[in-house]
Length: 80
Image 1 (tube, rainbow, N blue to C red):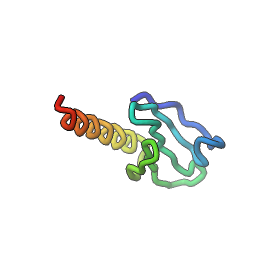
Image 2: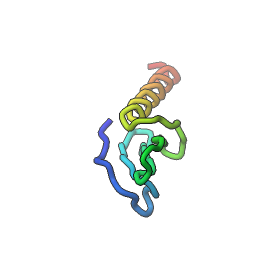
Image 3: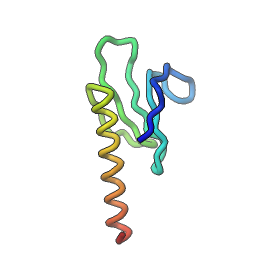
Image 4: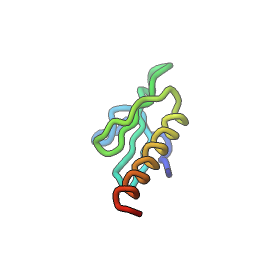
């Protein structure tokens, strides 16, 4: 996945510090409260909440694993 650089909160996108990756299933956003010393990294894909992780790298890995799982589900469903 191609992630953007870390961005500060932006109206209409995220109220928190975040990174974004565009995917075939929609925009994937990882966001966290950048002003806090320790916070979790929340992951959403489109309008679906995927989960939270404790590091940005593990959040990116979880998002990728989720997307690969969806690809396998769709391939199986479509008989590919």
